[in-house]
Length: 327
Image (cartoon, rainbow, N blue to C red; front, side):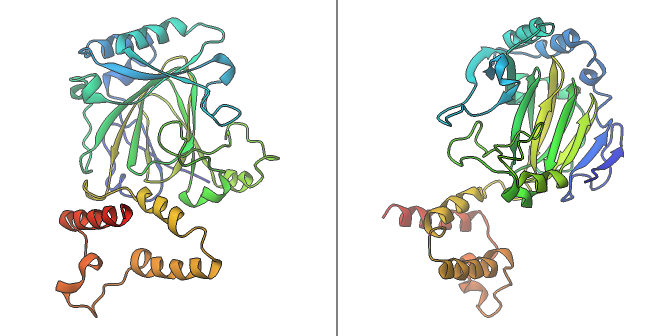
């Protein structure tokens, strides 16, 4: 599939972060000093280090034989990487030292909140985002591959050093991606068991259908990629030193719970019912959730959870659920 691509140095096109399809934004942040210094990892590291105020960061470390892929162990009882905590400059120092190593371990600092790790750096990253309460995070490492997963928030990923390859799949590819456990995950989100770099189609034959719909794009420093909510994506960092900054935001209100809660409850209460009952519940969900006509036959004051939800209504529903689940 062809990815929508526009060249937009320094400024987002109108509506670029509102669509339901991914969009490649070439040169969007090429004016940022970090992107301009991308060819010199030592200079990038020095700029980052200047904003450090003592925070430690979480790092994943995988052995060379993992091929940069952070994943499960063969028996699915754990993961092929360790989790470590280090001062941020120590991570920079190790990455710089490993650049010329023939077979280095894979190092990956993911989803590190910018204001916590490097307060002050945001002033060097000007970008007008017409989105609600964006959260800026840093991603740093060497050659690494994060398995195909999806995130609930919308995402604007900006490459500042190195190159990154994104392989994107529409949300409805889920049946062809061979998603792993829901409760044992590398970083909180379920991941595909297929390595999109070299898929084993004998073991995962349905992945061929997902592969036919994939959108693959490579970003250079200064490029950005808009990933709408729940689009599946595998991310590969392609250089010995890679830096990415992303912004996450949610289109719904901050007080809303994650829909994943509903999925967990549905697994517990509906999945194993007889087929006819599951079909009946499908009709109820279509009526009350996915199609949801306005219940004009009920007086407005009596609609309860059928009325548009606000924070107070969310609290009432949460209290009702907790009461029923604790019986």
